[in-house]
Amino acid sequence: MYVRKVYTLVFLREDSRLLLGLKKRGFGINKWNGFGGKLEPEETVIDAAARELKEECCINAKASDLKHIGNLEFTFEGESTLMDVKVFTSKIFNGEPQETDEMRPRWFNIDALPFEEMWPDDRIWFPYMLNSKLFFAQFHYKGFDSILKYNIVELHSV
Ligand code: 6OG
Image (cartoon, rainbow, N blue to C red):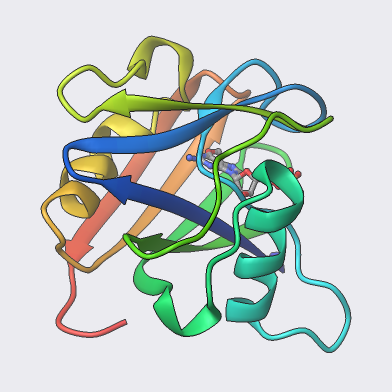
């Protein structure tokens, strides 16, 4: 039995560019990723997604403008936690991304994403997100670099 913990992960899109942030501390340090984190007590997933986006790169997005595009589940060999990550995208937001204590934001062209410096699972599910396909994926890791097994499916609603 796993202990499920819910996380958010938000990606902003502007034309052919995607906003990523270089994680400066904690889990996933030195990797480019979207913006997100754990829910606070009593908080809804969508409110947490908007709050984490604001805290990590100073961008305001209305919860209603965040589109839930997929779910990711991560387990790690020998660990009892299941990370349940709710992925959102948005094209509608306010402000210029700012560096914070947690993240260094940067726009990347979607044809030149820095997969070498991202979580290995991203190569597998990013094509779904970038093509606006809803998805559900599960990844079982050994350590933080190697995926022992995975499963990904396209959904009709999340
Ligand atoms: P904090 O610890 O900063 O939340 N996350 C992952 N994202 C990707 N793309 N791949 C993974 O593979 C991930 N594991 C966790 C979820 C951690 C943030 O990192 C995401 C959260 O947005 C294992 O509070």
